[in-house]
Length: 512
Image 1 (cartoon, rainbow, N blue to C red):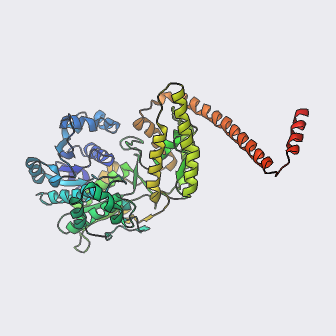
Image 2: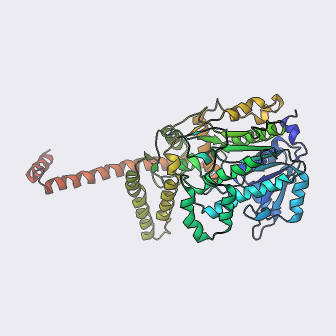
Image 3: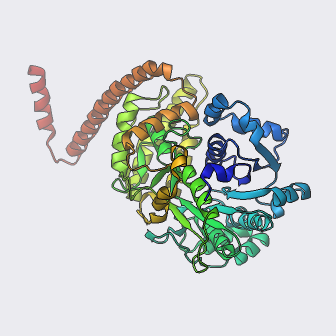
């Protein structure tokens, strides 16, 4: 049995979704930890006015690649081989030359690409996630030296079940039927059919990822397949750098929004235990899973290993605990630009959420934009932002108000399969992870990598934070005073308390 580094030596790898969050971390890790790897062929869309070299520079511009640029200058550029294509097209939109090149030269496939939008119409989600998977499988099936095909799914593709094992579950209808429907309807009909086809599933992402798994399962006896199911993928722990992220998904996005004072109400169960997995943990385990499958002869009755890349059986934290972490971290590392003092209320009552959203987020947004307009400054269009936040929170409510149990014995058991010589680079055991320290690094990372914040300006940000603390206290006193006056006025109006009593109290106060 070869080591992981030995296995990838000289091998050409095909990666879909290399321009996405997980895809970037995957290609960086492969090149940095397996420097003798062959070419990494990455599928990239044609962009107007940009050739393939420009696309490579665009990808490598991320801070994620700074470490390998310093350690091995020029190695990423040497290993990456961009191929123009499109996941939504037949034959992936590849030219005959590129298609044949992949068939002749590639021996490892990582299928990471997917549309992760929850509100994607069923037609578009199916063409990308289901038909796109079929096209990658058909291409890979023709590869003359294929050693392993790893398909990245999601642990939530079976979200209608509370207990999710590392096995294949049935879909409500066939993947062939889904593709046929998608290929024969227009966008209007797609919108009409979306709700009907979803059934119990909360969105088209989870349903189409489940359908894609059926394709992989069907071909498992003909090809060396792996299904890899991450939960909610978040910032890096430290490989190659601490806290790297390039999106606002998951708890990091919420912490950022709360930290800036934009979100003050969350439609979520505060005692809910959500399952988050750091992206570098997922990527290491993906590489190990691909290597292990290439070295294994599986029985015919169980030809496909499935890994739920989940953390909640090892590390748990409730929403309220994460909020407590977040408030402490934001106080220590505040944003310089804030709308209000950070703070958030959790609720699972839709009516209370709606009311408090209007009071705490919508009305202040309108008020602030009006002030900016009055003083002659361009408004920040905060009302539009609040509308988007509301839509997002409602779309996510299925996941923020439920808890799942993910079995991950295969995922954790794979750690023991890592050769000793490869442990330094690929060991992903996270049982000793300090959760508070992780979220602290993630918060700092979100500022550095999402907002390009210069951490040298932290003293200024802390002064801004202290100002908002006092402003919040002043407005709280004013707010309670106005409420008290209105209450007294109403009590007098309805003769609950006599006006003479209030007059007497006023005289007493004057005397004092």
